Structure formats: structure tokens, C-alpha cells
Amino acid sequence: MKILLTILVLFTITLSANADFNKIVEKFIKAELKDIPKPPENISIVKDMFETSEQFEKRVKSTKEKQKRAIEEYEKKVASTSAAAKKSAIKKALQYTWGKPLLKELKYDADNGYFIASLGFEAKKDFSKKVAIKVPLSDARGFYEQKESLKPQAVFDYDGKSVSLKDIKIPYKTKSYLAQFTDHRIDDTKVAVNISNEFDTPTQNISTNISVAKSEVGSFDASKLKDFKAIDKLISKTSQARVDKTKWLFVVGIEQYEFTDNISYASRSAKAFKEVIKKRLGVPEHNCYTMIDGDASQAKIKTNLKKMLRRVKDGDTIYFYYNGHGVPVPSQKFEPYMLTSDTEPDFIADEKFFSLKNIYGELSSSKASKVVAVVDSCFSGVTDGKAVLKGVAATKMKSRSVKFDKDKMVVLSAGKAHQYSNGFDKKGHRLFSYYVMENILEGKTDISSLYKETKKETYQTSLEEYGDIRAQEPTVEGNYRMKL
View 1: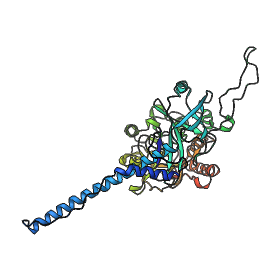
View 2: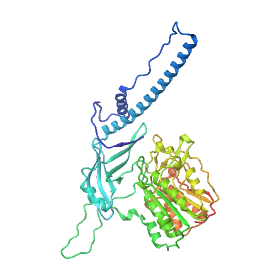
View 3: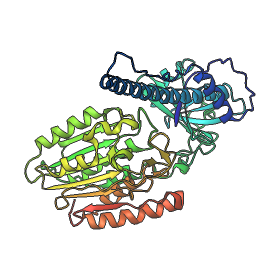
View 4: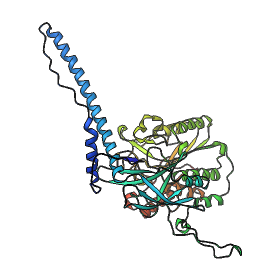
């Protein structure tokens, strides 16, 4: 269960500051359930002396049906009240034991576009960690000037046994910025950036009357970030392919989700993939449909896909790229769905359009003669070691296979149905996407060799970076004899 904590409230229940968290939750649940509705009263039916047996039987039947409905309604109300009470109790327990998150000592590194800050909690006095918040220079001054009015939000996971801090989000204007932990690991997700104590100081004199002082801002050590721009460099070295109006590109990249955990580097990889395909394969800009983060909503993805497919002509080629959460729906025998940025995971199955079966069907039944799909989501319900569905913890689920026209379409996927989809911190991209892009830029344009090399590199790196528990082996389905 993911809990979003924004405020601290006072309670009438007296608890020890060192009390077990589960016991605190239990006490709050009891308090929440004190007004739980009472069950329907038992009904005793007596035959009236002026009532025939047939009339009496009908009255008995009717009364039993009403009582059954009353009991069903009562059970629903109890279940709903209990669920609400548990959720409220967990939130109150978190507020009691942690309190609201506090950001202090904000300092900006303008060269790298990050704030460095100290994170603490109002009630948890022993917690103090360094965080980095990526804020573009255009918003940095306003962000800093409003630091006193910022309302950081803490995201916790509670599995019924233990509680863990997952993320810190800072809403500002229309965006939500993620605070990266820099001096310890949270959950099983590796830290994406490294912090050093100071800027490198120039040794030469700038002028006779100017002295160069060391900055007080903690900066990012570029040498430790390694190849954050590796793909950018490869793109710049690649010759522009001849523009081909028969080629189409549909890109969806979702890093920031409204109702569940974000995905590190998803939007960055999606934007880079677009540039790779445009330059290496010659897709014209007016044939590109790109939806990133908030633009990757249900309405926009659905509308834009229909618009593109309406424009596609006989013999054309479609390149489809999805980088986001994949969710297998348990109630539909683990039918896999794409999760849009504005969809709450628990209600993902309400919009059948976003089942993989339908998306692949729309693509492979189009007028295009060739469809190449790159899907950076493993549809196990877990990304970066974090569960998408509430109450699933980090348990991996195996999604159903999806049928499509395997003569005209091929799908390269990030991993097997039960595996994680991982980030690649050293490169600042999603792991699978990075190697797909690198191999395309290095000239592997037939699916067979592209897949073979990408699978080998992705699998090996996943073992090196995360170990066996998060091994990632890309898969290929469909016509792997195609060329890009």
C-alpha cells in the first residue's frame, strides 16, 4: 500500500514515541471503527391467522430477499468502512511517527541544474539525509524564493509488517520534482547521482582584480556520472539518413505518474529514441507523434494513435516505442496493459483500449506493411524493484502472451514476462532502451542482430548492476527477419 503524507495532525490517542508501528496502526484502526454500522436485526415472521399458507410463503420469501439484500449492503459497507479505516489509520500512524517532510539548506548548482538540500521529518528527529532535486535553471530562482511555502510529499510503502520511505516529491507550479537520495539507498533502487563536497576550482587567474572562491554548493562529480551523454554523442556522430515520408514514429515515455511510482530516465530515453530513429532511419518530424509524461494521458495517446493510423498508407512502416509501467491485470488472467500517466493502477482495466492485445491489434491491422515495436516494460507489475499495483509489494507476476500479426510486426520487449525492467544509472537511461539505441546507432538495422546484441548486453549489465534477483533478458516476438 502506498501512502502519500503531506501534513501533520494532532491526535487524542496517547502513544509512546518508540511504540511498534503496527501497534500504532491497530490503535488508530480501533478508533476509526468505533462508529461502524450495526448489522441488520434478526427478523421473526409469524403467520397471521387471516393469512393463507400461500400468502405467508410469499411474505416469507419476500422478507428473506430483503434481508439478504440488507445483509449484502451491510457487508459491503463494513468492508468499505474497514478499508477506509485501515488506510486512514496507516496515514495517521505515519503522521504520528514521521510527521511532514522538511527541506532545509537549499543550495543550487546552476551548472548541473540541481538543488542540494537536507531532508528531515518533523516527528522523526533522528532522520537527516542529503537529497538532490533536479530543477531547470528557468524555474530555479522561483523555486528557491518559494522554499518556505513548498510542501514536500513523502511516499511510503507499508506491507502490513514494515514501513519504508520510497520517494520525496516536491510540487511546484504544474510539475512535481523528485528528490534523489544521495547518501544512502532507499529500497532496492540505486542512487542515480553522486555528490562531492565542492566545485573544481580554476587554477588560472581570470583578471588582476577578481579572485575565484570555492562555491558553497555541493556539486555533482561529472567523472562519477560517467557516460550520461553517451547516446547524445553517438547521435551527433551519426549521419542524417534520407528523409522517408513512408515512415512513422509513435513514442510514449512516462517518467512521472500521477497515481504510482515514477520511472527513472523514462522520459529521457523516450526523447532520445525519437532522435535516434529520426536521424538513423529518416522519419520526418511531421510523421512523429510524441507523448511524454503529462502529455501521455489516456485521451492523448488514444487520439494520437488513431490520427496516425488514419494517415498511414499501404506499404508504410510504423515504429512504435513505449517506455512506462506495464501492468498485468489479475482479474483478467493477467492480461497486460499499458499504464497511462493519468490512470490509477487499480482501475487500469476500465479502459480496454490500453490492453497490449488491443494496441498491438491496432498497429498490426493498419495499412502499414511493417510494424516494429520497442517496448521498454516487462509487464510483471514491477519496475526498478517497485510494485505498480497496491498490495502487491515487489512480487512479480507473469503476464499473458499477446497475439498479433507476426508476419508484418515484430516486438522487442525489455524482459521476460516475470522479470523487472531496470534503469541504467551510469548512462542516465533505461537499461534496455540504452542498448537498443546504441546498437541502432552503431549500424545494427536488422532485427536479428539488433536483438541478439541488445539481449546479451542488457542481461550482462543487469547482473553486474543489480545481481540475479533483477536479471533482465529482452525478448523478441514476431517477424525477427525484418530490417528496421
